[in-house]
Image 1 (cartoon, rainbow, N blue to C red):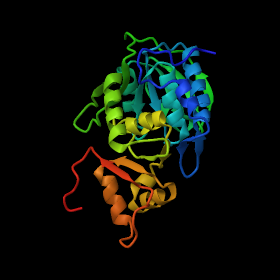
Image 2 (image 1 turned 120 degrees about the vertical axis):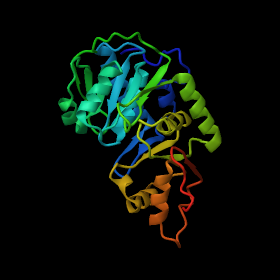
Image 3 (image 1 turned 90 degrees about the horizontal axis):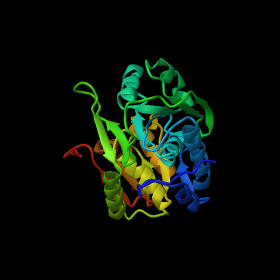
Image 4 (image 1 turned 45 degrees about the vertical axis):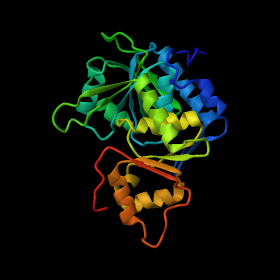
Length: 289
């Protein structure tokens, strides 16, 4: 067994922190439920696969999920437990772009779900990384290859590298260090009074900074991360049905999400009593809504 969680960054999650929340629900959707103890075990397996494959603390690891299911949360925490810096990739992007971002970011490894395997095979990567493939519950299916050689010094204070959309050209890398992630997530935790009884609805992709509150702050508090599929996010009716079914206490999303929700919600019906906090960011809220 490898030694995990021994890092110089106090905000990086540790195995013991996850285990402390025990049987409490870490992740829930309309099809899955994962406890913190289960999350810890599966994330530890990912971390060990990365370390056994040559990953060192401070190395960069790409993360790709086609389902927004438990595998993505498991992959995220597996990378962090191994001491890696996360480079989230958006499943909806073309394979050529994903391969380019992976290489330009200096990723030594890639964690992806089974649903993304075909997309990964389409990537044109001259320096193939170690690949850790997960099934949809987050269990390791395979570990393929060895960590790629890159001309980058490890950086343990680097939490992640996000990328701009590339709508005006080539996507630009946006490094986020642990001190910045900590400042943001601690501020949001105080603002929302986040606690272990909360159920936080995850809306944003991990390629957006606000999703790091959803994932890291929620886990640190021992709260439940609620997930919707990408299909559910496309229409107001599907969003409304998911909000009814999942009963979130906190939603942090872009204004267009709330616009869809409000337009689909029956005028005579109040929002769920469980919903106590709504936060929005990333767009200007339409004045006529």
